[in-house]
Amino acid sequence: MKRLTLLALLAGALTACGSSSSSTGGRPPLPSGVEVRHPAAPAGGTVYLNLLTESGESVFQQAVTAGATSTAVNVNPASWQGPTNLAQPVESLIPGAAEGVQVSAPGTRVLFLRWLMWQDRNSDGARDSGEALNLMTHDRVVYASGAVNVSFTTAEPKMIQRWQLNPGWGRAEHYVYLPLGSDTYRRSLESQGLQRYELHVPTPITSQ
Image (cartoon, helix red, strand yellow):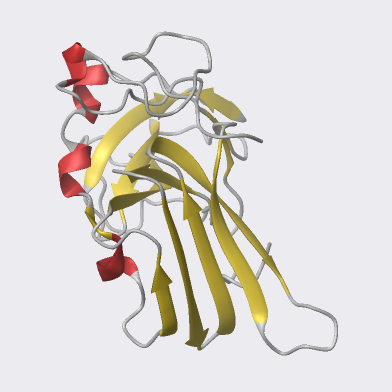
């Protein structure tokens, strides 16, 4: 798993991060080759994959074929122009109670997005209460305005966290473990190139 593939606005193959295109207004190119794996999509109403900010704002949505267990995400380049504007200084994304905070490039703007799968059971075209399927992933779609490394410690859960993010769009891979003989978890969110996400039943942040 290497750094995220970015496109020259959906050019197909995996490319290195950080290349730019005049058609993007100088922004890094957009993700390509994205795959989301999930349990079989239920019948009885259109199922959607939805990409949300951590606060719940939708930035992308795509219908899923009933019975499918994997979905290739077809990104419309125009739909990805706006989300970079939602990025915030990385310091603002660190938990307020964190200790020992270290940021390699203060002010770097970062955006984390999470996948959600839902079924439009009443066919009204909107995600209503109770329509979200009980699935999640600890991995995140991530945008960073530049390379940045972050480390900090939290008391609940007792955990040392490290973020290593590359510039542009990527997949921030979640990895966590508990060292032998220790009561403090180690967790990392690290930019990877393989754009493959796996939705599963909810698990705590201390689960790999």
